[in-house]
Length: 152
Image (cartoon, rainbow, N blue to C red; front, side, top):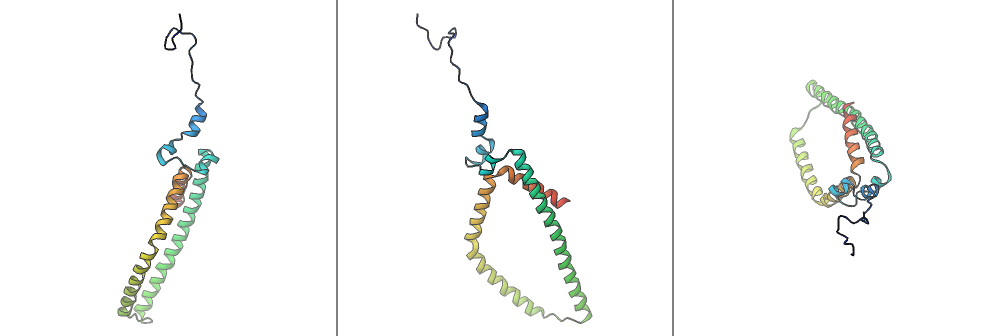
């Protein structure tokens, strides 16, 4: 009697061996979420290494941003304070009509320039979004490190 391949009593059953490491390498979770081209860095380093690299660079950037922001805010605030003291003491006279005229002129100039620069800005945003999608683990580490750097 010939054996039927679907027969449950057949001793020569064929099993397919699935290599889970190769499957996991080809079907990563971020590939399903962000697309198949999930990046050169994702293939070179482990997830832990990417998070560490992103976290350290993010922390450094956040720390520098915090320090520079404090210095800039102090300088601008101090400058305004000195101008107000000088104005109150009579050392400086401000022609507010001229200031208003110059500010309106600058607004018009910026609106014209903004319309011309829009395609370049959109291209930059698209490139940045593509980079973040390709390097999602590194980018998420950077964002977390950046916030920690701001807080420290």
